[in-house]
Amino acid sequence: MFKTVTIPIVSNDKIVDVTQIKIYGNCPECGGQRGQSMPRFFWEENHVYECDGWENPCGHIDYYEAVRNESEQILSYQSLMDSVFTTIFEQSQLSAITENEIKHCKNMLLDYLTRNKSSDIQAKKAG
Ligand SMILES: [Zn+2]
Image (cartoon, rainbow, N blue to C red; front, side):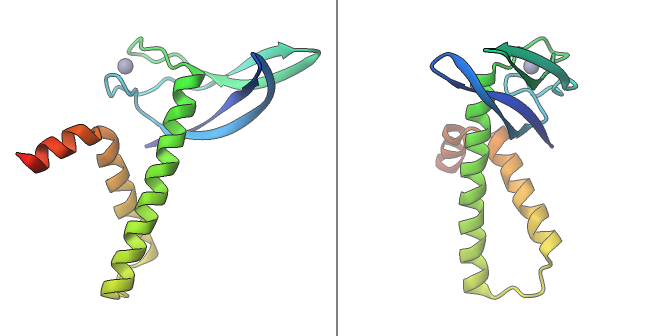
């Protein structure tokens, strides 16, 4: 469900480095599968930076800025999940649950959060 991509780090409109980030495997606009990554080269002040580029089959364009924000959101969801799970396990001492099961549950929750914007979740709770 996740895809790791390399994107440029930009400072003052110039590429200064590259970084690997984790994004969803699906297009945030329509949910369709994201395209296959291909190397994309950028020249900046005598440096060549190799990043990933991809074309989504659905035609929606992923901009680096948008995927950077998406990866930050994933990280914040993950730390939220970690603290939720830590609290649950500390309180209930569910020692029978394996690491793998916990990982699976976290991924499912993360997936749920992605597919349902927080406003929709609030609306569902209210309804
Ligand atoms: Zn799309």
